[in-house]
Length: 232
Image 1: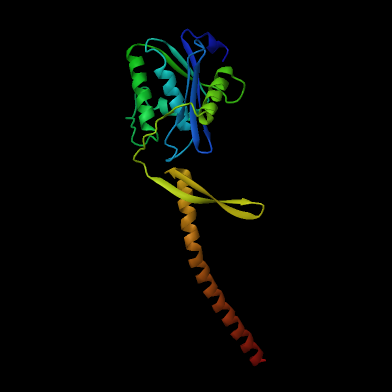
Image 2: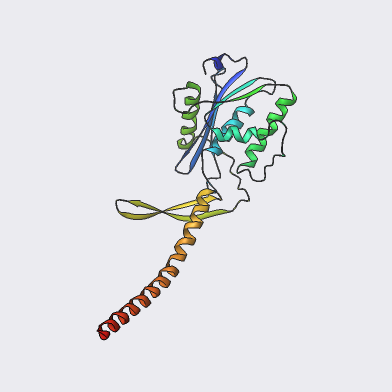
């Protein structure tokens, strides 16, 4: 990334953080040291993941850069690059219907549209996380501090219309089983929890059926052994 620092435009980096269900986003500008922002990211009542604050950090960088200024954005999140890439070039029609954070993504896409219309270059570059890359590490610190700093404001708090699922996840530690409360919009974890709950509900039914079958087998075995002894 050393050549990237020589980019003729604004060189920015953003990062998102998710710690114990609390999310924070931060971005910094290497050309303008005073250009940096951080926010808490809301909607933790629905779900929490690093993807949402990563997208929020990208939007912060876009909003803080003039449309006419070329932009190089450094991030360590592949999901962000994939989400933006769906809206680039020709192909199938992209939609925000299933996007988990459609409001944030829509705002970012609108700014990108304006930049494209103005003929301004925008580059998103993937960097490795926690490998000493100074711009990314600075953004990571801002995102982490945003979660714990009470002076940092919170954005993107409006609830969506997505259903929120709640369940208890079993955890095995030192031979003991404890249950941790979980909540999320529909994802792979919710699907697995539904499957596990359905399986646990079916177990007693099968246990009862197998127990009855075993009792019948035991009864028939005793009768057979008794018959064999009588035959002798």
